[in-house]
Image 1 (tube, rainbow, N blue to C red):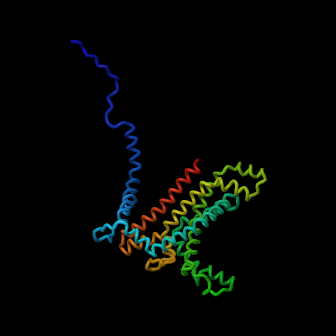
Image 2: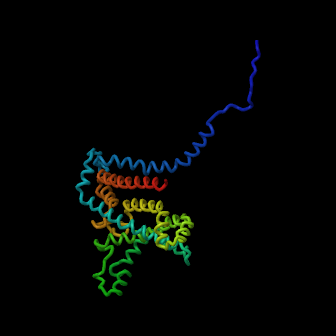
Image 3: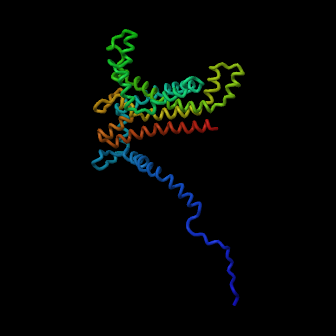
Length: 312
């Protein structure tokens, strides 16, 4: 009988999970907390909102499937039309003004001027300050009778206080007031983004343009603007999306003790909130939310396409 020879490598056989699996498990363990929070508080509510858009439900009685009736109501609802129109007007006013002010500040504070860092902090401060606090201060400053703005205008022009704009208290001036407030509060944030873009511009481009005889305006038009195109596009898209989702600014500036907004200041997100939690018409409110989602989605798709264009 032949003896069997056992060849040993000296290494124990591999047992358990492999190294790559362990690395994947560690990676997923870092991702899991954020993903679970996203799934519970964002993904599931979004899916539920899509379902509610096709039903009639008050939160207490059983859901009643109504198909596209909620969307048909939107077509005939003047209140929804007014809220959507106010949101569009607000967006048209806020976006270009914020971009111009932010870019102007960024160009100014990118120069070597005295107190540059202090001024950057001052202009950025309104963005991080409490919205409730700054809205209260803004309402006092623009108070029709006691506010310093109208009192200064009265002293300069001699126009009686009763004939001066009532700002947030006047439906004809309310949108203008909230646009000014939004630009003032947010321009510091976008100024920082533009500053980052300006500091990434190659200074040799300015030197070459200056050697070619380009003045300051031509250097701005032919060097600064093209080099800031990706930054400008990003700022544009973020501003549009945030403007369509605005809610808190209008509530803090215009809502009274009953937390209600009138026709001149009612925006789309407020209308969704009011329909869902005051009228308890969750299905109809979800249909409005879907319309808002599609608008933001369309803007986001444009943003991604623009990023691909500028990334080439």
